[in-house]
Amino acid sequence: MQSFRNLPANVIQDQIGDRLQITYLTGPQVSFTPEEDGQDVIAGLTAAQKTLSPKYLYDDRGSELFEQICTLPEYYPTRAEISILSQYAPEIVQITGPCELIELGSGSATKARILLDAYQNLGGSLRYLPIDVSGGALEGSARELLQTYEQLHVHGLVSTYGLALANLPPSLLPFRLIAFLGSSIGNMPPEECQLLLRQITQALEPGEYLLLGADLQKDRAVLEAAYNDRQGVTAAFNKNSLSHLNWRFQADFILDQFQHLSFYNPDRHQIEIYLKSLVDQTVTLKALDLTVKFQAGELILSEVSRKFDLVELQQDLQSLGLKPIQAWTDGDRFYSLLLCQLQG
Ligand code: AVI
Image (tube, rainbow, N blue to C red):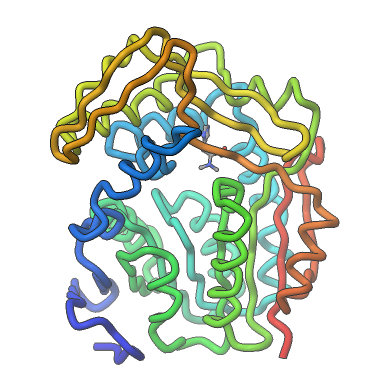
């Protein structure tokens, strides 16, 4: 069994066979610890601009809907990222050499497979450390990977990113590459994003790598179509955060009384996603002892998706000590994968 630095006392280690180990850093439901449960909802729904954390988009149904979004004709980011990865993974691994692959937000590990294939072709040991808040998804995808890759060892960390980065097990390969894909960086406010990048720099040794996926600024029509798809899957995904609140906090949101609204804010270079109350209404969240009044037309901000300028992003990374080594984009220059190396 691995030894860790500064491990919290409630860590559960699960050793499954020789090639799979899972460490639960704060219990199976880390994003909803009893102490913080719902406090962010109270703060968000009582603020002048009503807001919900985007984490409420992702209960089981929300995660299924997000998987569907990734296949929609209008939603280009997933396809663009996979096409860049598929085309350039051999080049990425040539630059990094054999690396332990650490992935923040591993989900179904579809993209990790592309990198693992390339590392496998390079020869040597294959090690994968997925980090995800969902223990079930992490274990399921890890077991599938072990069937495909006979030489692979997986050590999953069920954890929030910050906690996992502060508690990475010692590397068994000379270098590590942290992959943060899917442009999830765009869903974080700038301060949170800076904090995560700092945590990444603290987790890496000089010479080690970050592979970052980032959605780029582009024509407004392309962006707005991607977040207002014709089949209404994004609308269902957005409204599902209200059913999530209904079951988690015994709330009584009536979904038909809210409408999905999403548009590009060119000043902030971000897609803003809202739920618009269609009528004057009062909603009760019993478990939080909270009653919220909505006026017809009032908006709840449920997600922001920032779009990046590649040059500015590279400068920001450089200023944190993450030297951009190479950036790859798709043919439309919609999306970018950036490989950075931590400076000494
Ligand atoms: C997960 N994240 C990068 C998605 C995005 O594009 O910002 C979430 C999403 N929201 C609506 N559609 C997709």
